[in-house]
Length: 515
Ligand code: BG6
Image (cartoon, rainbow, N blue to C red; front, top):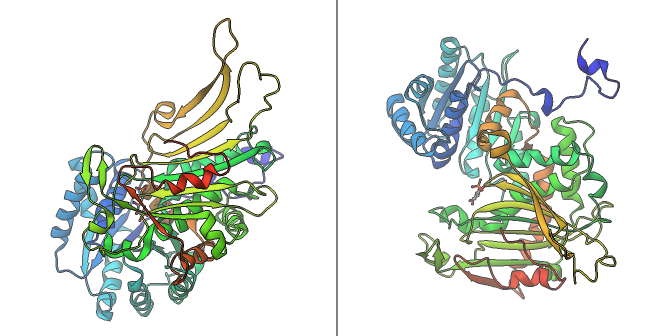
């Protein structure tokens, strides 16, 4: 009998991350194979999985792109970029074996014949490499390419697998630019792939500490009883980057920080922090709870946007002592651009647990430090006992560092050693690196493995994405309205954003946490 059956509290039928599915042999077909994402993230992630022995025994990678090149050329280019971007140094013997299973398929995305020959090639790979007819299609392309790709995959019969095998599609962000376009993209993908086959990637969910939020909250008995409006003062979520737009103006000019980071990554982190305990750890139970959080976000009117949302754009300044240009002077950026590179929001989740607890979100490019963290600020203890020793007591703050230096810390009050009675804040600190002694895998490693295993827990479901746009759209509309649009504020590169963002908290006697 299994251990689970011996235990009266464990239902053996429940699924979960703890009983992780096993990744299966498959061909990974990457559309947009010559692009940045493939070189910087996808191939290095697959290589690292191979190096750690985590890839299934038979995996083939087929790059699908327009440019003419041979398998050999493609492998060579990928080797160069993997050597540059890989988490661990590339070892020749592992790379050589891995590269043997990498192929290049040249075709235009709209060329029917290219998909027919792809189908033949995949059949051949199945026979030669034992990939068992399983196909994982990765759309590393702009969303306007989705339609021809899904249409032709369907026409070539590649959207459905033969019995005993599977076909899945991973879709990269941006998943729409507003609710209407997200719905349209969902419709397009759905015309060929069911929701169960569709994996919408949000790489923040693959970050080790983001996954640890559920464990922290629900595998420890001490936090959950305090995790509500009665004990919490507020929550801050910050994602700051020293990087600027980095040659991505073509995309970023039409997106801006709210669409690029808040609609997806920050709202996903917020869901993990704010969700109710799921009934089990299956993909849908977790996503059911997450979607309830987004649905409960208080929608902002135009007046609310003026008070609770702030947008900024970086001006020239210095990062790590080196001068950098302002956003408007970046390549391919309109010199009068009003695209925001910084966003600060004050929002509320209108449900019982979070009633009237302010949540502050902040993202920005060209800030002094790169880091993502969530801080949960508890209400202060009453001062009555210590009013002779202190004029104020600091709040307890639980900080979850998503990156870098992944870990968790708790700020508490302690008595300074000595004969006098002085109270000072101290920190209990847990660092992933030192506690577990091994580096966390890259987000894409985890997510690719999950897609190969058929585990959609860490991927966004259709309703989550659409609900997130329902919250974001009114903010975008207010910012882009012809009349009385709230101003765009400017901040010097290398500063912590526009001064006006401090006001958002200062009017309630709070300050942003320094990273
Ligand atoms: C991407 C955004 O999704 O996330 C980028 O498009 C941003 O603008 C990046 O720089 C940040 O991700 P990470 O993992 O580097 O923090």
